[in-house]
Image (cartoon, rainbow, N blue to C red; front, side):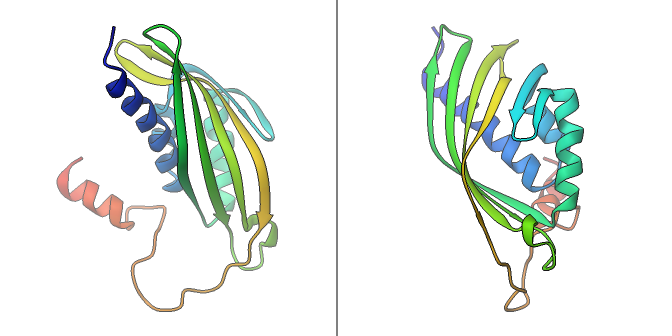
Length: 165
């Protein structure tokens, strides 16, 4: 039997990797969260990871940014190499000031069928379950300072490049 705490950590890291990929518009990270034959069920989408990643990319390019906050996370194991993961999250989406419908926050759950294959946990099938949505109004930054970007100028990208991570 495997070390359950290490498995839980690895599964949670898959969810965090996915969220980082979405928020940084790094579709390679999003793809890494899934097994190659993974399936995703999102609002407005239902299909394979090979179909999902480009679909997601088209939607994210319309937005100026997103920020996912991961909350409660629970894992139920089905044997050693299959798990059901439920992750509560809040995700904020924003566009340009004139894109009213692009500015919203949603409460959701990722209900994931996770599998360990060749020692690596990843999503075999995901349901992105939206529980609620509310419109948001965004304002211009109040002062100069670091701002997140979805390119090589983002502070995370700068550090990753500097240290070769």
